[in-house]
Image (cartoon, rainbow, N blue to C red; front, side, top):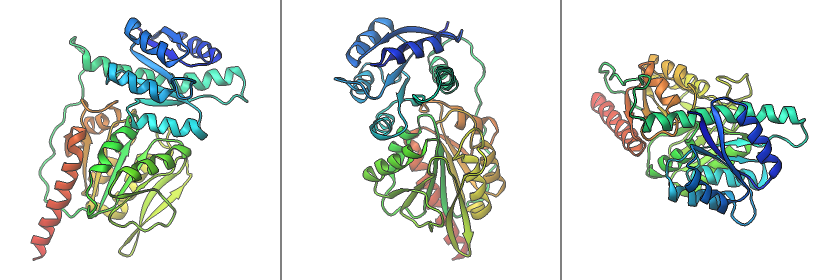
Length: 360
């Protein structure tokens, strides 16, 4: 059966454009197209769509208000926010992602041609629709499905001190990070570095939002910034972020080298750098996300002697990135989202305790 999409946008032009582009794909059908939030809520109950594209900025009942009501009806229904890159649209999109939106897609520039606009929508939106609905259908299906990666516990290795935690996330990541980062205590003893796939204007807003709700200080990464405990750094959009060592001090680096896995920032770039600079004393964490970014980097962390934990499928919006790590047999442990921080804290405390015992 095709994926049934409900389009919600106050612009008739956008509704028509989205309908034409999505309907051209044989795996997608348009369940309906409505112009405001209140009509969307009625359409959800009547049409039972598989996914919703939701305009961020609408009069009367905007995208945030509509999303809140949608989540009361269905906590797992995939919702993709359709927004502009800057200004109020960006702020509301980041808020929507933190409130449970599944993902976002950027509206094409009005300056471009119609063909270019359609291509932008097709190339960005359709893969996200298929990834989100594929995950939902697998979770709710009782029929035989393609086998999913099975976690195989690694052979035992002696505990090592952890000096740095490196986190990767993508689709569903802002909401996951919004649950994870505020759980850390103010005296968490090691710094945290994060790659979240987002444009530049979004990562700054995400850092500010996490900072306001967390005991740790959360900022965008800066070139040459020294890594200190009690601090979290998020890679700026459109920049790869790396960790370098100068003597005993770890510092951040930023660059705009080629995209990896169609991403900049890329988790693989960060993970390779921490494996090189921190070696066995790093803990890698892979959260929800589409694609496989982070898998090759996880391999370098494991080869350096470090450990990698991943989010489980049941709590992930899309189990692409963590599932890829599991399939490659690179995960030391698979955890539900609400167990990620306790597992990190356990490993940091246990490995530090063991290290002190060895040197006592």
